[in-house]
Length: 196
Image (cartoon, rainbow, N blue to C red; front, side):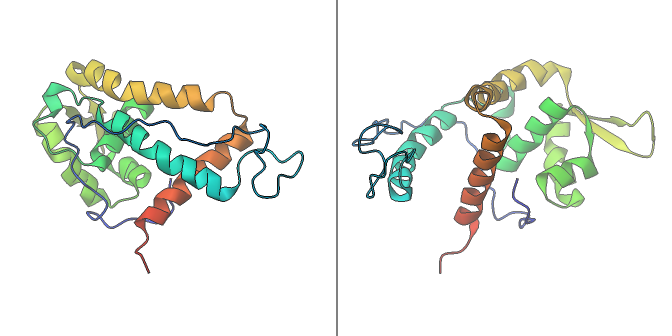
């Protein structure tokens, strides 16, 4: 998503998979798009959706609920002994949805150095979560894939999130999906920027 290559370690925090209850209060005082008074301070006729400050307020109240639900998605028992950081989850997701990939291909997707990917997959290979095989086209290249013994568990774990995204994005047209993805990427970059 973001274009800038991140520092190899700074963005990662281990995922424990432990559930933590988060407040799930519905945002109060929110005007639905198109409802009376929903045009913000101007109240201009035909204005659709909230003003920026109202949208920010709604999202600030929504995000803790989203994070809480994500944290309640249990890591499969076979992976709980590993110290999984967010990039490990992205790595597994790429292998699940894109199929077997080389170290260089994973590095390009994760926007990290190939040496970092090699370190990331080391423990997963030792734990038989990933398999490293020769590329049948180029035997000098190694290909990584999810071991069949763990595919169903990982699919059930990450597939739930994929299904939720699909349901949310399917009603949008292509330009709306592009705006949503770019907005989410810009928000993530904003969180990564040091405070002035």
